[in-house]
Length: 192
Image (cartoon, rainbow, N blue to C red; front, side):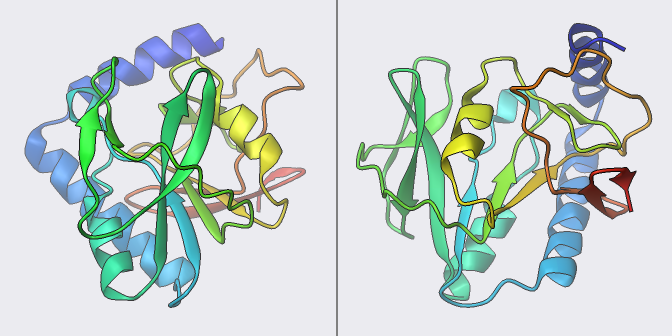
């Protein structure tokens, strides 16, 4: 299927989820992430703040865990047309941007490029790690700038079951996808 059709389909599927389903799925995704990756103190994690009106995975579970384990937390902020990584702390202040997305008040780019994990929002991911977001391309640009050693991890309620037909060379695939049921690893030949 084409990205536009998959985007529409998975926005509708996500919209049909109840608050209870989102809570349960988010907990299972969080648990699968922790059990599989076992993040350690001093590691650096870049993670998105969920857009609640779009029913995104509740990443507050992750950030609470990271703060309690002395894991460094960074979140995205859009400055002009670029995604920067702002380090946040338990007492960091947030505000809503023009799109209604919660972002840190700080505009200070951490300059960090060697994240251990980049936990990435998405609407859909196919069995080759190709992701569909909201179509702005912020994460593809961000992925270009970070260390190749950084693990790019998508989190989603749904497992891959359809290929994306219109992938182009500027699309940077994920390394892993964490769903309520599975942790999937992507390599050159798709799922391993």
